[in-house]
Length: 449
Ligand code: PMP
Image (tube, rainbow, N blue to C red; front, top):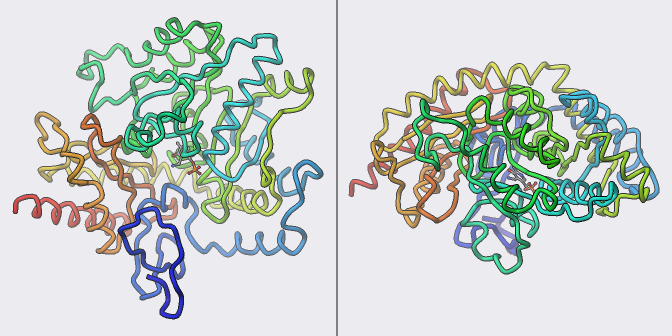
């Protein structure tokens, strides 16, 4: 609700809800204008990595703002962009991933990644390679190109006529294996489906495969089996398909490694990242591209036919550089790994609830899946909006979570995604888990009525 004297003209995300007015943040906490304190258990939408209100970032922001906030990317580069790119490249898993394009967020970065790969294939004389394969139970953004690539049925359903044809394969969703396998019998059919799909679509027509290394928004931290990503990489190599890792949520330390694919020592051709890159201090995304792609365009037509007004924006880049500097100085990626283990261990207690079917995660990126029947893994009727009800109960009790479901399709379970700032302490994790447990219980009690 807005302050008394102000009229409310905001076009909200949920038009039936009233939103408290946010006031300030510090560390893992946010306060609203009524003085109520919340634990930011999901870093908003998996954004806040270094915590709220870090003075070093505010200083870097002021320093850059004093010098210059905006100079268009078609006229200038900036020291800030150079530093931010240099730091990102140092974090990348391979020296060949060494060209960085800055954008305003994840969706723009996804669109950019797809376009750069498409242009690359034209530059190297393979103009028929244009299809991009992606997965169901995925999210790549809300612009129409990115939404078409995503596999969130609920988010896609209003916009189908606007989409290009993009083939989707099954996700690596081990709790609900799309191939009906128990873990012991898994032979990574979900990865092999990429090869079959490339063959169906025609290897000469497939430009890229895009996926989240650990799925975030659609399923709550789906961690694939070891071997999955290695197999995907092999298939991409065999058919000359570029691998785009969408690390918008998982990148820059969130899962306890610099980038999530590092867990499996897999090097993609393009990394898309955002969110934790600026820890929410400014809207910022980035695409990290292999030298080979960059150089083919440079020695070919010489220009990447793309651009947004705020590409390589100096103020955003200065904030990104300051966040990366802070991450390094405070050794926060290692902390994400350490505290991630603590979080996952403490969350196990939630499995005692009759509706908690699965608890999973990697680093400080964890998911709790809610089911109607634990034995059969039957999902709740989507119209019950169990995920939203749990999130609402948690919010009421002072815990911010990121609720989700793969879509209103009855295939995916409801889930809660947790992604607290890396600075979270053990006792704050205890509070988080306790409040989430209380929220789940409150919803369960409501179901009995
Ligand atoms: N990719 C992934 C994996 C995401 O989780 C998101 C956002 N949740 C996006 C892309 C889109 O990012 P943005 O909302 O910044 O456009």
